[in-house]
Image 1 (spheres, one colour):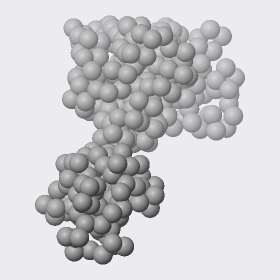
Image 2: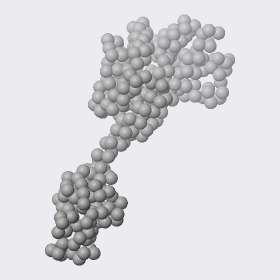
Image 3: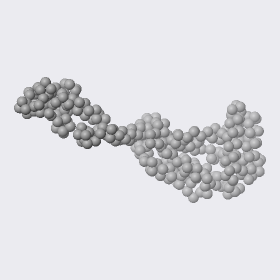
Image 4: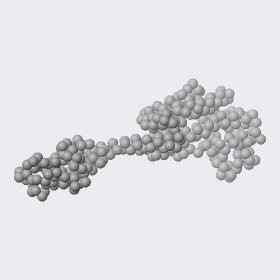
Length: 325
C-alpha cells in the first residue's frame, strides 16, 4: 500500500512534516487513486520513500495538489500543468489559452442550445434536427455562401433592379463572435427560411412580376421610388395612429394621395385601371416571409428592427377596399 507513514532515516524532513498518500487523501478530499496517478505522471512527485518503498510527500504537496485540482477542473491537461509547476509557462499564459478555448466551447454549446430549442418548439423530425444542427454550426464563410446561393438561385436570369440586389448582399447576416441567444435563434430560423423552396419561389414570383411591370412602363427612378416608399410609411403611420381602418371612408384620402404618387413613379395615369394593377402588384409581392427575412437579418446584425410591414399591410388593405368597393 502507498499509505504507510513510516519515516526514512535519509529524509531531510521530520517525521511529522511528511505525509503518506492516505493522509493526503484525507486532507484534500481527493482519492488515493487520483493522487497516485498524478504522482506517477510527475505532477506531484514524492519527496521521499519509506524503507519499505512507500511514497512520502513534503509540505508543498498540499499546495501542489490544490493547484493541480483547480487547473484540472478548468480543463487543463496534465502535461501543461507539469509545465506550470516547473515554471516553464505561467498560470496567466495557461489561463489566456484556456479562456479562448472555453469561448469556442461556449459558442458551440449555445449553438447547440439554439438547435435544441428550435427542435423542442417545432416538434421536428430527426432529419430536420440534423439539418438544423448543420445550419447552426456553419462557419462565417459557409453562412455567407448559403445566403449568396439563396440570392443567386432566387433571382437568377431576372432583370432585377441592381440596387435591390446590392441591398440584399449588403444586408448579409453576420453572426457576431459572441452572439446572444436571440441572435443564435434568429440564425437557425433564417437558415431554414432561405432553404425553403416555397419561400424562394414566392420571392421569385414577386421579382418576376416586378420585372414584367418594368417592361410595360419602364424602370422607375430609384430615388423617386425610395421617396414614395418613405411617404407611404409616414402617411400610413399617421392613419394607423389616428385609428383609421384601411376599409373605412376616412382611408380614401390616403389612398388617393399615395396611389397618385405611385402612378407618377410608375409612369402611369392614376384611375381605376391603375389601382387594380397596383393592387395586383401589392398582393403578388406581399409575402410576409420577406418581412420575416429582414427582421431576422436585423436581429442577427444588431440593427433596428424594420417596420415597413405594417405600412404595406395597411396600404394593401386600403387599396383593396377602394378597388373592390
